[in-house]
Length: 264
Ligand SMILES: [Zn+2]
Image: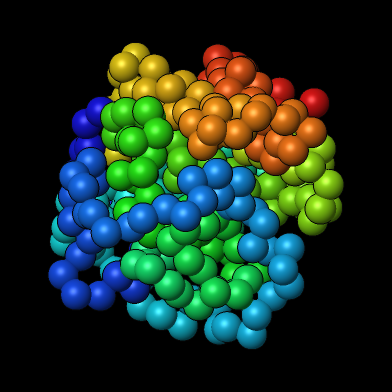
């Protein structure tokens, strides 16, 4: 994966404080996970707890990050804006861009307090994706290698924003509904990867990147997470879908490039 120079998003908010967040892929250390299964098991759940009264990040200044990890997130975010902006234009609509908030440890969100242990999540109340970058080191330990694994996660969270714009974000507490919503987000992440392979964007993707997206989708399948944490695999407890389902959903979007396949 190559990153071309280009515009900055203008929607990236940096609450990390104190000298950036280090490099993706190098151990930031320190974060001991109590609940590895929480990763991706909770990325939409915070919204179910009801909205806190936190101010939306709209009144915060967006930044152009000067560290490598921040710049990487910025480039992926720009590429989601390019792709979804174009797809919305083609259907005669305007894409409302989400914010991405980088934070360390704890942060206030429109959906209550965000915590690193939750993993990345999307809050529809303030239309923002929240990322604690230490997550990406965990992702690597979970077997999802490569920069594109990170891009896939960001694309998945942005997909929840697209679902929100389309009125498709289920607030149901049922696991079956949750799995359906999450697999649709994986499919939409695949749509993004398909279009991000164009010539124009800020990212230059290759086949190895797509492989790394597939391995990320497999690593965060509910069955893989349950097995890794020594639990029995219980399909009825799945919230995001099995590894196989997540890979298939990503690939169906990626191979077709037509977002309608994700809505059928
Ligand atoms: Zn999700």
